[in-house]
Amino acid sequence: MLSHKEVWDSCLSIIKDNIGEDSYKAFFEKVTPLRLEGSMLTLQSPSQFICDYIEEHYIDLLRKTLRKELGPDAKLQYSIVVAGETTRPVLSDTEPTPRNKPVLLPAPGKSARIKGFNPFVMPGLPSLEIDPQLNPKYAFENYIEGACNKLARNAGLSIAQNPGTTTFNPLFVNGGTGLGKTHLAQAIGLEVKKLHPDKVVLYVNANKFKQQYTSSVQKNELNSFLHFYQMVDVLILDDVHDFAGQTKTQDTFFHIFDQLHRSKKQIILTSDKSPVDIEGLEPRILSRFKWGLVAELTTPDYETRLAIYRHKVQKDGIDIDDDIIEYLADKVSSNVREFEGVLNRLLAEATFNRKPISMEMVVNVVNKNIKNTQREFTVGNIYKTVCDYFRIPVDSVQSKTRKREIVQARQIAMYFSKSMTKTSLASIGAQIGGKNHATVVHACKTINNLMETDRNFFEMVNNIEKKLRS
Image 1 (cartoon, helix red, strand yellow):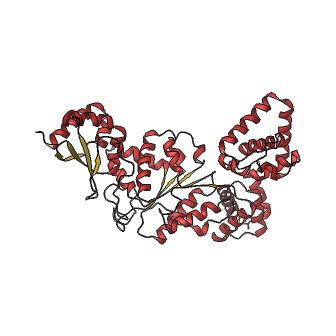
Image 2 (cartoon, rainbow, N blue to C red):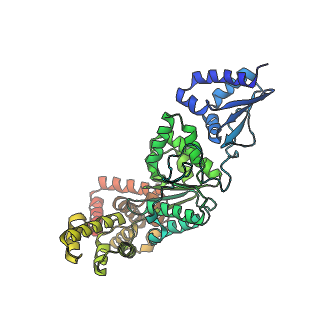
Image 3 (cartoon, rainbow, N blue to C red):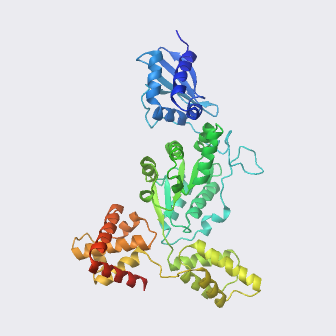
């Protein structure tokens, strides 16, 4: 009668010959046999992730090796050990285990200290403390509410009160450059730390996550990497679109996401695109991004820009007349980051020339640094202009009517909204007739085809564009 160790060693000799060295070291080397009772082998694993990964990727190989050693009735169960604690055994009959298996994470009140691998050590504190990587300037008090961000901001405040327990998990925030995605994500993290000091909050950029993953594989520290991220209470992942095409990174993040979500840990994601518009990400990951709330940040309107610019000038203690701020709010309209660049140039010029910031100086700096300043395009003003051109009521585009002239106006409005704004396809469809992103794609293809085959239609669309840009 073979012992549990002999059975597992025989299995490993076969497994090692059939998978790569890196995979063997990462997922099998630290799995140890505990006991053998009849035809049931019990293995001890350092994490739930490893069990999930083995059964998802190597189930056929595992089944064959176990049945070779123990016969056709071979069964397997796992005993999972994390940070010195053991879960109850998880039974597997060498078929994929259910996705709702229990996951062991740190007990409440203990999660602020992470054992072992820790790439975010806070200077001056013990090596077990995590630096949340949050910037204090990105607090909610500095995040001005407007129509462009109201939904996302209010959802963030709700999450901060009860992280992981609201329906906004994950919270997926998308929008163009400089519209405040990082600010909002970090504001949520800062608020969580203020209201729940014991929570482990971590902000990390997707590129940083990729680098850490690659390094952990190279150094044979993948298990530690996984344990570290599974123990975070609020994970903020910025620029998740950067995972596109990174198959192994995506696979690892997928399992971390599932572990955290099952354990009611909060996940916050940001991207420059909505989930339906991101290419190069696995469908199973994109589907999870839509489990909670997808909130889009749009370009702030004039009133919101004015409030943001006034707040920043006042907070930074800059002496500048209100009429200048109003001028800047009108001319610097793409994003707040662009405004900060103009403001820095004004301060530099005023300092070097030892002159106060004047309207003449502002006009000069804006003309030099804000190229092609033009009318701000939004989905709303585009479809209103299109309706004016066709002399039809605005409400008709939003209705469900299938009249030819209304459908054509709706499609043209979608076409220009896609080409002249950074708004997602899903948001364009929602604002124009309550349609989905597939309808917008179809509308754009239809308009392009008609422009290529019908000269009169081509000239009509050009006239509408001139009207939009006038």
